[in-house]
Length: 272
Image (cartoon, rainbow, N blue to C red; front, top):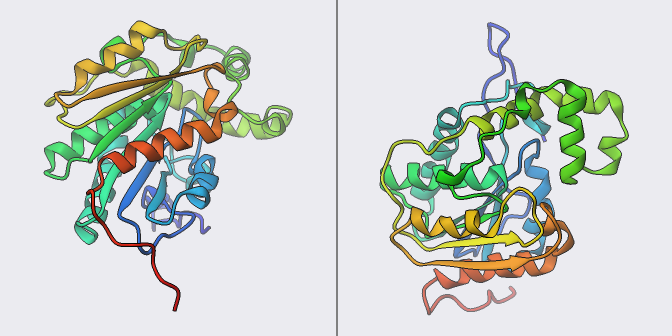
């Protein structure tokens, strides 16, 4: 993928937020995935290829990583959501017949939630929201690791286990990623729900019963964010249980997408 180009003043030109690794021309729904703190769109590459023919997966690329490395990372939720929301509205206008479902894990759950509210206010609400591994917005833990020194911050990244051993063992790469990781930690640790209305869409909450970052009560509190139905699924495997339970999690998320599709739809596309 191309890297961000530079404007005349030397600043990187912001790129669109969405990455689609496997286009589904006949898709009836788009599943938009929001990465965890320090993560990039590439975390959902296989989700795109493994999705069924009528579900297209797009992943959000936050500034400061992968092909947006030249852009400064954002540590304010409102700034991040403004850019993502605007891109999703353009997609909705271009394909109004296609349902949009948002999925986010950890920090990504909070970003997906605020994006859902942004889209609702803009008149393009998502069909559903699926959140994973994160306390309800009004139960967010006010930790301060973003103020810690480098070693303490990296120790927490290792503790959570969501970073590959190749990255963890590469000191130069870790140091290069530290500004992005610290910015993401600042974003989620200082986050409080933005002003705005409640959702009115189905919300599905996924979490692990052995996740140190979210307990049952914090997960169950998500039912307070919507006037629509709210359901829960519990797994085991720590904060990044979705890596250990990859197939089951993907199946659960796709099932959530299926629930918001019309009962009737096009048949499997015929071969030419």
